[in-house]
Image (cartoon, one colour):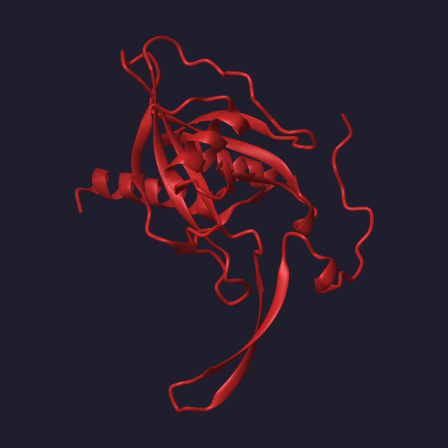
Length: 207
């Protein structure tokens, strides 16, 4: 299958935008001076006040047949005109909790069914100088009584997502290899990999 690529870019009127709106706000700084700021917002935010979730799936063997692993995805992201390596993620539908969205989106994008939620992060923002978009990182448990197998994805039409299993201990090295191949790494995924690598170094040094 040919690779995706951006073939044209043009201005978009805010009135025509479906997924992103441009806003201008006025705020007061600590001196009382009024200032202007421009930002993008998602018009799809549900009444929960949360836009989306990213999902950290902990794939673990109940019998020790494979080391702790996770699932990452590769997909083309038009705004950066590159293939991006990232965590599974999705928008929260009206009436859903972040945890329900995480379990649903994980199964749709990767085929894996989580048995439960390990933890949910506080409300997070990724680029607060550019957008008011927010999210939560939901960590889910995906245990395996036997061998680790890749299930069938349940993608919507128009979704082209490649899912991969990676050992958590080797994740940082895998991301460096992706960078060498020309992929862009999602910040949330890299932060997790960097934090895990640093924690291992600190543990080994007994600091």
